[in-house]
Length: 463
Ligand code: FAD
Image 1 (cartoon, rainbow, N blue to C red):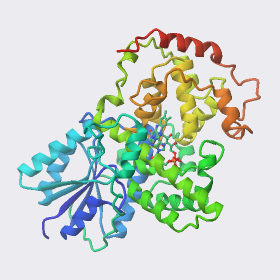
Image 2: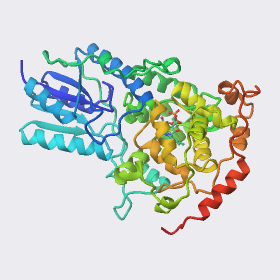
Image 3: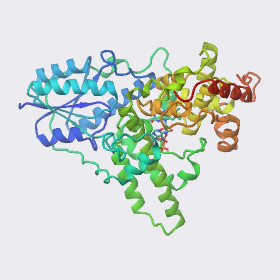
Image 4: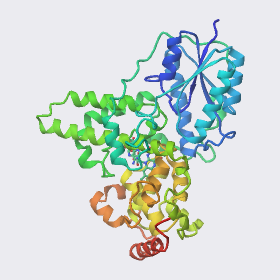
């Protein structure tokens, strides 16, 4: 058998529009499809519990899509560089392909592997797959990275149209004789206890579901997206974030499916016109995802350090177990906060509007460091994303580069009146709201808001 090409899958768990797989297919040699669980040996942040659950199912469905093409998914665990070396040695592979990642630790791993492969005379190629615009291509007139969303967004729109999705190549053959682990042995699923019942009810991971979800969203929800995207009781947003996080759908697919859907609309009708507005608003959100990665790429410290150093002096409160547990388990006595936190715990997701409210409550009313909240989200969200999570937490906290000002404290009661006027969302997740056992408010909203503003006034703004 001729020397194979290796396709190293990472955050791109799909066969459609997968440039690394496509390049390997074009090369015409047998293919080894490889996924490496490297959860200990590098600085890459270990996955949280909900993400591990998702990954298990995602790998399972990827293996089945690959089987449909006649390919096998080989699973290996260990340091990525060691695994790549041994797979290359075992198979005699002459080329390794992968799609790019943008985190600092991820880039360090990938760059090390690329140079050692090349030094050994093996072709190593990385491709653009998970971002529409490479972070180093969207720059200000002075050649600097953007710090503010709106000009970044305008600059993206002024770029050439993102490429069309690539076809699935079915003229591919598997390389026989490479062995791997059993997915079950990786123990990605929780067992004692099995807390994933709510996740199983809420989600079907995999690229087939992702595409169906996108198409159903375009057909049924686009025209109400602008009016309803902030209403947590409505199923008005795409629900695509975990699929995008794991690369079960690419932003190129989302972009072009949406654009062709809009092209098919009759904009002279009011339905057509509102759907077209919905499409622009939806693609703008997709560009927020791009912006998060742009910030992560240019300011890697954004995952853990305040982007505004003045916040290093902020007098945060001690995150005691009692307070953290009340917030995490949705027992703060503030109904919208509790509904959001329970939605997260049960289903692995939380509506965007409510994420802002629970984050503001933690960082401002409870005056707890945003990193505590970010960590909890990292562990419990199925869409826990290395860029979007930290960027959004810093946005709410006021410590980010393009952030909401600290003094903008969300009032969860007013937010509930405005965005959940019939308390439908609150009642769905907090059915015990009228019971005697439902806790009284953990803090007084007015007093804690004032204390937060006083604390903010105490830090020097010009650092
Ligand atoms: P839609 O409204 O259908 O939007 C389409 C896509 O655009 C989303 O799937 C997502 O990929 C992207 N997007 C939308 N809003 C944002 C945003 N504010 N920032 C970046 N990308 C966005 N999103 C994550 O994907 N992972 C996270 O870990 C994450 N953590 C967050 C933490 C906080 C404190 C906050 C306030 C927001 C966070 N978000 C995160 C952003 C946002 O809440 C989710 O992307 C959104 O709720 C996903 O729902 P959807 O797919 O139905 O969104």
